[in-house]
Amino acid sequence: MLAKTVSKVRAITNPDLVYLGILATKYDKRTLNSQEIFRALEKASQNSGIKLFSTYITSSVRFAESPNLKAPLILADPEHEGSKAYNQIVEEIING
Image 1: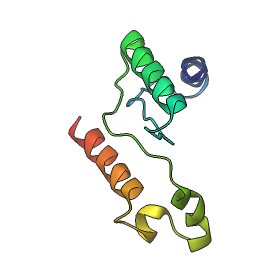
Image 2: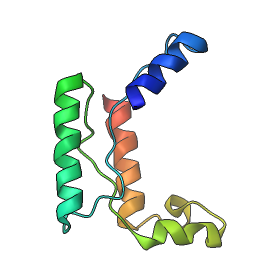
Image 3: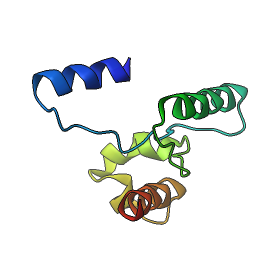
Image 4: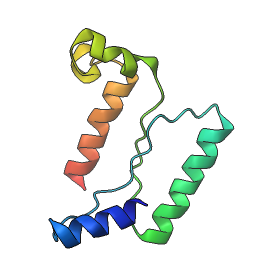
């Protein structure tokens, strides 16, 4: 579905649109469902040639709570595991 959407965007408004990669979010390594979805993402990444970021964003209630703090979690709690993961993604993107 995402590939179709990107193709449409390329055709209509942005022919230079490219994928940076696939980012797994709301990942909970303790659940079978998350593990299965992650394996599916790995397979999709291999089949499509689109990079799967090595960093993933874990599931945390703190993300849902951050609007109450009127700040993104990365600013409200920079030491939180999720905040650190987003910083790691930025590093992965910058460093290729």
